[in-house]
Length: 124
Image 1 (cartoon, rainbow, N blue to C red):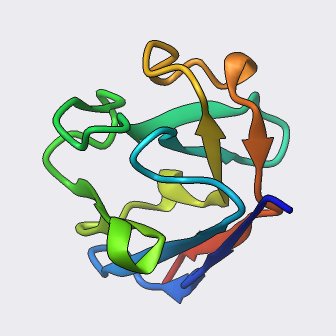
Image 2: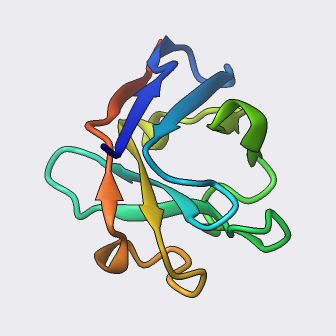
């Protein structure tokens, strides 16, 4: 049975760092693309980053480019999101999601499976 479980969220001051993890079970990371998405209170969900099944194609939202890094470890069934230079506007619930298609990129509407999310709060 498929499952995605996020962890690593928390409260950090502006300029701080967090590393989110997404533990995947029930499907193969060599076949599925993984995306990270976030949703802040009162705002629509937005795509943050994605890595395709091969690990070659990676994309980021403009708002996080240069600050966030996505990676995956297929042997451990894990996907990570390293977040540096965090800003208050990064505060949101962060979700990882899996897509059988490699072509959905940051379009969350086309993703097949979702985790429950982890809260990230950036505040002094």
